[in-house]
Amino acid sequence: MQFNASLTPAATLSTQCLLLPVFKPGTGTPRQTATFQKIDDALGGLLGRLLDRGDFSADPGATLLLPELAGIEAERLLLVGLGDAEKFAEPALRSAFASALEAACKLKIERLAAAFADPLLDDREPEWQARITAESALKASYRFTAGKSEPPKPVTLAELTLVIDATLDQTRAEQSLALGAAVGEGINYARELGNLPGNVCTPRYLAERAVELGANGALDVTIHDEQAIEEMGAGALLAVGKGSAEPPRLIVMEYRGGAADQPPHVLVGKGITFDTGGISIKPAADMDEMKFDMCGAASVFGTMKTLLAVKPKLNVVAIVASAENMPDGRSVKPGDIVKTLKGLTVEVLNTDAEGRLVLCDALTYAERYQPASVVDIATLTGACIIALGDHASGLFSNDDELAEALLEAADESWDRAWQLPIWDDYQKQLESNFADLGNIGGRKAGSITAACYLSRFAEAYPWAHLDVAGTAWNGKKGASGRPVGLLTQYLFDREAEALEADELGPLEEV
Image (cartoon, rainbow, N blue to C red; front, side, top):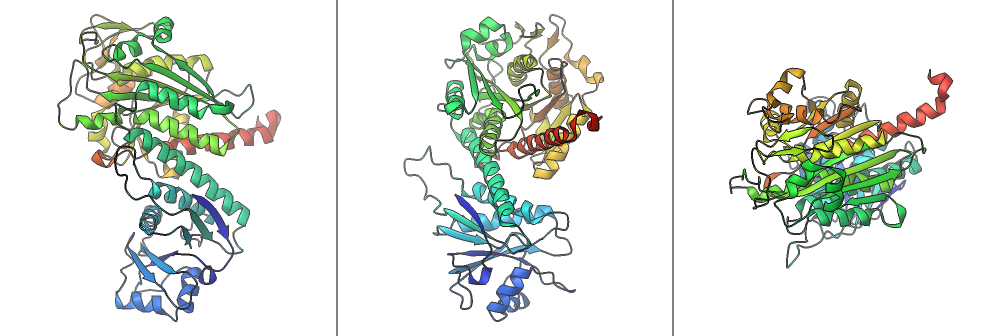
């Protein structure tokens, strides 16, 4: 999809459809946008009459399509409700933009204009709204077609023009649109990988996608196959994949946008491409959704795709530990003891707690980079869904500054997270009579003890764990692409910090 910004007034802009945000009429002074007033004047007060008669509710996300209106050049006018101006906040804005663009993507049009640059929130700049417009448009245009013999009708929308005025610099507006589009593309890439069935998206398939992303030297890509994993001593990752005909892979992608001596930020993704639970097999109901157990890895792939488009001056390493967890005569069994890459031994008390097994070896592998930070992302525990539902990802960290940075990025991107503790009190639940630790800690505080397990392998650097079991997919509706928004914002913020430090220089910084 092509994005651009135009200084042509909305009323005179020739387009197949114009999106116009509308507040509910209130008892006090209505707070409509300047563009709304100009469009309403061009239409002889039609919009005001529609609102006064209640023909359009202007509830948050409500839409109304008005075709062939005399007075404006647009062939159609699509109104989108913002709700009550007195209660208007960021969630309503994001919801309205998403609803409007989803409605527009259902129309048989190629060209769309959006009057979304008028300031709607006191604490948000028009450039930010431009970014959200492009991101929302890409997300709304996504369709999964790979599994259909007769694919659904494609979205015809190919061009979106943001209507701006002289108060917003056109170059900055287009840069913001490009940034939003890059994030949207990354989210959609993660959704596509997550939605693919397990018989297509295997560890080897993910490895091929990494090589594809790294084409022409865009990334340094290393694929560790089953033999290499065994030779390096990553026994936990190897154990999870033993029961499958699909061999495991440890996938490494290195993006070098910063100085050669800049410590990288490392993203670690859980890539269980299908999870039966292994010998501790899951119930049949909803097991089809376990193709989404690689959504942590998918979000890492999506983030790397965004980075390749934006090209930040930052070093980032992505590590994906990928395996298929299947029951077989060779499968790891409850009570087996495996040796991890770190050298710690683990008693496998439940083979369905396999995510932490593949991640612990990946976290140990990350040590070689002497990283500035490490964030792992995993659909790890059902307990996190019970605690936080599908609204927020669970955040755990051994570093307060890192946790705060991730929470700020979560709020900025509206890809929200909530921090939970990993106090030493919980570590005793992982004690084993036969190995250094067990891979589960019992029913109590299941998401916390899972994070505590991972923390044993992340002591050498600032580390955080995102449990996205409740946020990475929406049941049968498919993958959400979260937390690509959070991760990309976190990395953009780290780039800004690095650039600011370079401008200050070592003496001024001290």
